[in-house]
Image 1 (cartoon, protein in one colour):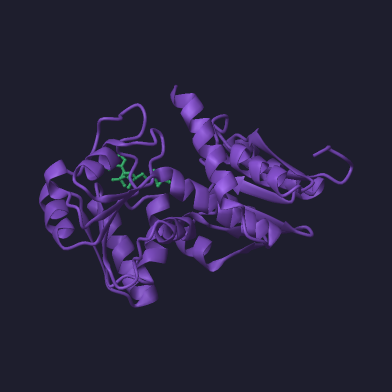
Image 2: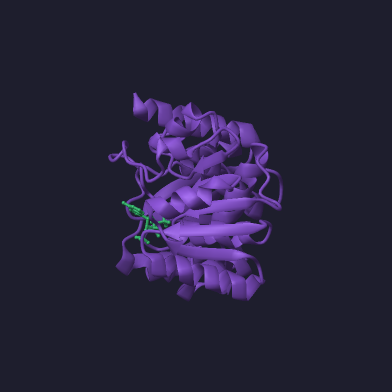
Amino acid sequence: MEISGKTQVFCVIGDPVEHSLSPTMHNAAFKHLNLNAVYVAFKVKSDELENAIKGIRSLGIRGVNVTMPHKSTIINYLDEVDQTAKFVGAVNTLLNDNGKLIGFNTDGIGALRALKENQAYPEGKKVLLLGAGGAARAIAFQLAQVTEELRILNRNGEKARQLANLLRKELGRNVVGDQLSPILIEKWLEDSDILVNSTSVGMHPNTDQTVVKREWLRNELTVMDIVYDPIETRLIRDSKDAGAKVIHGTEMLLFQGAASFEIWWGRPAPIEVMRNAILKKIREREK
Ligand code: ATR
């Protein structure tokens, strides 16, 4: 694709942003579909966020991904925020619709699609979710709408209880929350169908960390980790070893990106192309 006067610009803003895989994934998709568009990364410090938003408006940047530390504060500067992003209190995708900036959160939809595309269907199932941070809130909001029971455990127990209470109240669904402890993980995992780790445990450089003991994992279980650095986390390794079905963090990364793509372009994202681009980049880095 030749850059021309008609080239549309997309970007991710955050700090740090140098290692974001979004440019890799989206540029691969643009190229594959022959779209006249480029995707770049902009490092934006917290005290520059407001100016950056003005820049997005004035330069007509068409679509933006938002990452740490701006996911929550950005809400103050937008014209509209969709229902999911409102509930989560965080935005990871902006659409610039002829000057109107609309915020979305695709983390939860991405996690749900990652499960389904890997033949794990949470509908009517019991699901154990570890974590109650930003990503966990987005995932919990989507999961709770379809599961028979959603169980949330978090190191800070109050956050897990509050999230469960809110989901019960807002959605009228069966959700419980408590403090993460070995006893409760073992007990709640026993009759769960799916386990989702949405904590940062196991992330580089603490690659040997896990809160789930190998002996609690079994082969009827599906285990999804949202940590993708490394691709093969300790939890994923132990789960494989136990014969469980595993879904790597790269799948959630892929499908949240695919959902952003679909918001911007109104057409299906080229999943396989995006997946290959991410995996190639990560493998190069892991060498
Ligand atoms: P993100 O936006 O990626 O979800 P976050 O909002 O900072 O990031 O959430 C990080 C999650 O990982 C939280 O659930 C956090 O637990 P607390 O709420 O108790 O802080 C969890 N987490 C981080 N380190 C952890 C550890 N060593 N053990 C257990 N949970 C941990």
